[in-house]
Image (cartoon, rainbow, N blue to C red; front, side, top):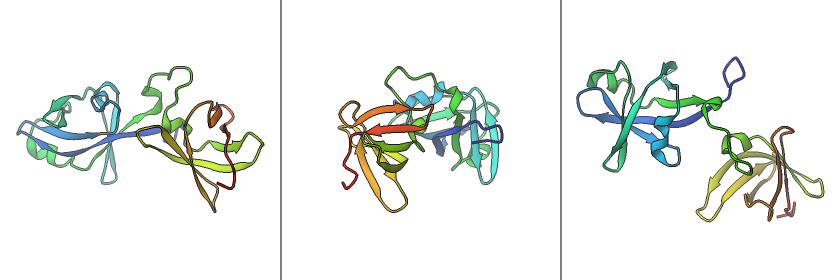
Length: 171
């Protein structure tokens, strides 16, 4: 979060150079990966510095993505950005549909069972291909709970910061 309380999300990073005109190779954490170019503005964070970038454009190139950043016109200037992380304010994302959630909004939620037993807070999520999994940590234990609505996840209340799950606390 920045000083104004805005939550920022890491969307990707600059991983290399493409050509001689200042284009860079980008690793995207968005799904689909090309969606990274729809979010604005970017904040590039690298080596203790931060720079706002609005108007980055890009495309698929081979198996990866390449981007052109406004004001970046040569290979040497682009080389200085290798390793820079691409961040956006959470407010730049569209509102999710009912019953859908951004992982970033779930991280930090308190997890309790339907019988009121606290299981900790969501530290992160990951995808297994079959479903997403929340990782709840309480300081001594880590529990991996499938993020399957109605079957395991009964309620997500972002306003109160709580997720209610059907889960055996001893598991």
